[in-house]
Image 1 (tube, helix red, strand yellow):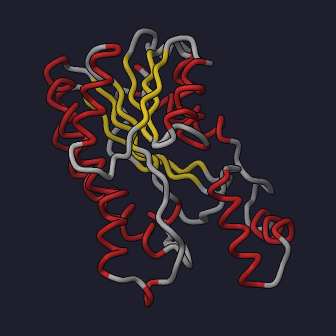
Image 2 (cartoon, one colour):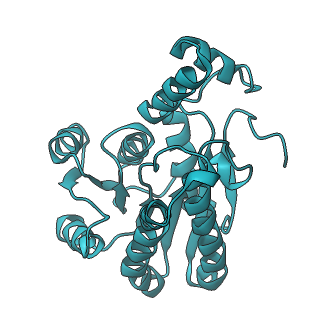
Image 3 (cartoon, helix red, strand yellow):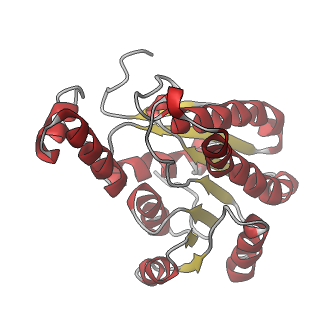
Length: 257
C-alpha cells in the first residue's frame, strides 16, 4: 500500500523511547521527515541520528511557551507540519479518592492543554493546505477507566472529548483527527506499572506481568512497532475517510465494541 507519507513533515513529541519512538521510527521508514522531541535531549538527538531524515529536539512541553518553540524549531528543520502526533508520558498512578488539585491540574496540563496548544499552532496551516493528520496516543482507559490510574483517566478523557469535537469541525478541510488507544504495550512505562502492581500485591514483577497477560485474549503484550503501524496508517493518504475515531490496539483487552 502506498501511504503517501514520503516527504511529509511529522512532529512526534514524547519520542525518546517507548510508543513515541516507535511511531517516529515507523513514519521515518515510510519516508517522512520526522521531528522527535522529548525532555532528554541527548537521548532524542541520538535516536534521531539513526533515522534517514530526522532531527531531535530537547524540550519540556509543560513549560510556558514550549509548544510554540517546538513548532518553530520543527518548521525551521523541515517546513510546515503535515502530521502531528499528540503524545506524552503518563502522570503517576493513584486512586481517585487521593488526587489533589495540584495533581489534577498537572495531569490536565500534560495530557490535554499542551496538546491543544500544539494543535492550535499547526492546524491553520493544515487547513489552508487542505491536508493534515492529527493522531493522538490515548489509553484503553478512555473507554474503560483503569484502576489506580485516576489522573490518566481524567486527562485522557478530556483529550478524547476535545478531539472528537475538533474532528467534526475540520474534516471538510482535509484534516483528519483520530485517537489510538494502547492496551498493554511492552514499554518501560508498562514495566513500571507492573512493578507497582507487584509491590501492592506481594508478587514478583514477572508474576504481575503474567497475571496481566492472562487478561489479554492475544496472550501477550503488544510490540511498540505494532502500535506505530496503526498510527502510520491513520497518518496516511488511504486513511483520508477515517476521522473522529478511537481505534484500540490492545490485543482484545477491552471486551466491548
